[in-house]
Length: 169
Image 1: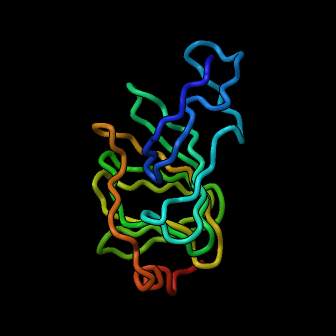
Image 2: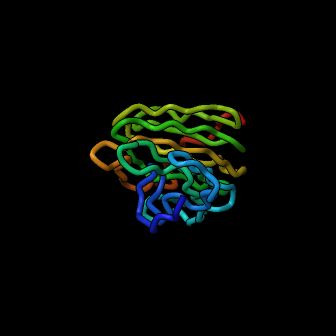
């Protein structure tokens, strides 16, 4: 299998350049690509879309006709996304640490390692690490008309503090 040139891909959590089949084993069969651990690029989360230190490793983006895309996203303590929506929803598979997700106008909800979070289509929300522990999740979202995320305004420090204050750990 040959390497494909880099392309900008929206992965539902960030926008970063990725090889379409980075690290694909040359022995892979047609139609199957094995993407080796550590073979894809890591990128810092864009300041317009994230608060704090965020590392994004896109490993799940596929080309059309597939609509699924995703990344492994690691949030330092207190780091989180801006408010955003996904046209077809988003699934988060939490692999390490704990964090919070909040729908606009609702109370934040805590989640932890091993939890799966589903955010429905068009729901304005943010998610990220708790104030004192890093959190990693796999974020998956499908694209509609080539778009998998619509970014909004940053979550204010006051909104984040209020959402995470007094929550059980």
